[in-house]
Image 1 (cartoon, rainbow, N blue to C red):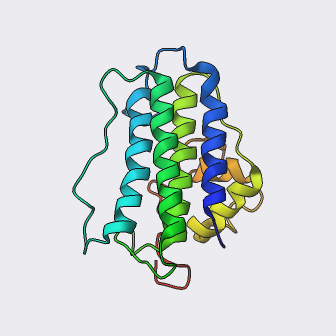
Image 2: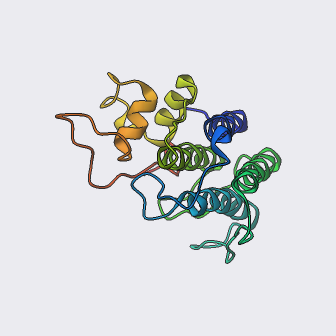
Length: 199
């Protein structure tokens, strides 16, 4: 299942559309069921996307590039959204310029460009939903995008969630949605490495 940088653009657009109407609210409230507040969750999105770009560029052996991208302490919600969007666009540009043979470290496996793109989409949409939940709104990403994310990043659950709306399936598997008589796993994992590699 191929995910492209166009899909990352779609994920960022869904995140922006979901939270832009509530940029005037208090982002110090808890983000969904996370321990973080909405402000720090948005900061985490930007950091993750820039970190993935760093991995692709530097390709360190068995570790992350040693940096942490942080928002200014006084950043407004609008500026945090901008930080996340900038991180996503830098990652997308990095993926577009990289050799398709690039492999780089991630704790869940040696990731290819599509793997990093898929994980980035998950970070944007799921943490975006955490923020939205904390602010009493929700995201509404394209369902074909969610299906592509499931197929590439969570191939091991595609059959299990085939009867669900793809966005609901993503949210259920990662603990964001409760479905009666269908307990979510205690822990979830994703496929960072190519689909034809060991997960």
